[in-house]
Length: 268
Image 1 (cartoon, helix red, strand yellow):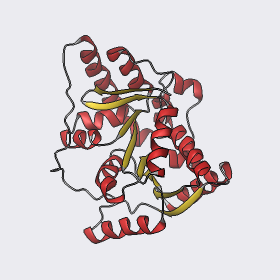
Image 2 (cartoon, one colour):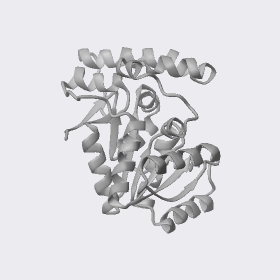
Image 3 (cartoon, helix red, strand yellow):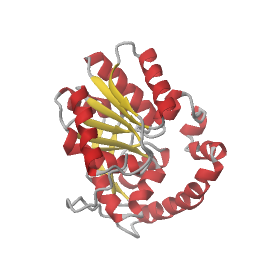
Image 4 (cartoon, helix red, strand yellow):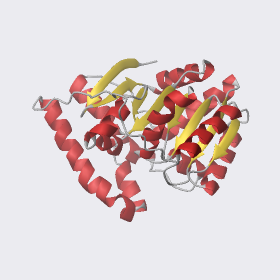
């Protein structure tokens, strides 16, 4: 089990952990009904915080931000000499947490994505882990929620008896949701984005060799060029440039912490 602490990558605190440590922390929080907000960030996720100071504070208010992308893991290694055996890939983390919670007899609330994807995701989780318990599931409304809708959602999740939430709203909305609902639910919230689509079988994953080489973005760009070309054409070079400056000591990126004044976005 590896937990080497949190380190700033462009002002975003990323935890240098392995799968075992992340799963253990999430499972313990679920068993003890403790607030514990988790996100798995690749380059795009880090850059959303780098380019938006308010969102950076939200990200730094999460309990655990794992290095989802190889370039984020490489930054931890290059800048801080924190060697990890692998990245902590959100879709894989989702399955490992699902397996752990099933073993403990704890249930999960699935929130986000589309109705069809959600149903397939739930079926596949139960097929993989027969003891996996789903306390409830609800698709995204793909808009902001009213105050009443937000409170009603909290009550539905609480009433379900869920010990954790798997959240699939896409970056950065899911991280905002996890930050805003953390203290309202007081259970782990795992923001896993594309894991819903991958494990539902509605979106293919990159071959392992591309994932290991940090080339997953190429595969995803080929799959969804219209949606993703700006993300990768602009954000990837920006990330490399600024991480290089941090590595060379030309710039320092101190993380900013939440001050409680962040605007409530209420994405749902």
